[in-house]
Length: 308
Image (cartoon, rainbow, N blue to C red; front, side):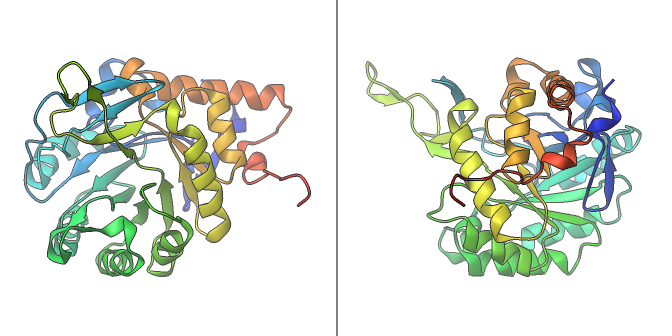
């Protein structure tokens, strides 16, 4: 158990700690009941849910890169109907808040999923994955165009009474215009960063190592990029920011909080250690004790550059 040093609030929610298991790395949450104490987490995010089931991309889907992992799962999921029928009843019995990650290929997809989830008891928030290409706009990505992003967030905000988190992509020139567009359109919070588009090559076979070709790089390799973008986003908006990208230790988590994040998500580390999210929370508590910090909120946004 961790101490009261970690207790915090996020968008009005009381959290045991600010360490959250990230979508796509924690199944639907219920699978982890057997291998880790879910009450040690601040919250967890279930894998992305779409209107209909998806089979995902061809294998191989995962490649261990230097200091990280490239994946191209292809957003495989059981679909909205099966999630509501088979997962939601168990999830509402777990005494830890959970967020539902939502994605689609047109604004109507997101709206439809959220409208149905509004009738489901349990979710504390929705996290919109905006790294998907909008098929109605020629494949342009929601997360790379402020106009498209505003249209999406506004439409979902109109049907949602729950906390709305927008998960931003790092595959953009500047994060600030997108962060502001999400905030101005009704987002309650932001989470960033998602994975970085990458390519692993097998030189002997002259072929990609991932079945779909390109994949998303995550893990410690992207942490410096993620920290920079979290800082920039937190400076640009007033809503809370959740930082993720290479969080593997309690001190990693502290770095994101100092950079301006209100909470952090743990992703890739869950693949090699199913108990990583709880462990990182305990390590963060140790860091606070050693630094003689009374509460985790006291370090949020405390980064200062020399000369500024």
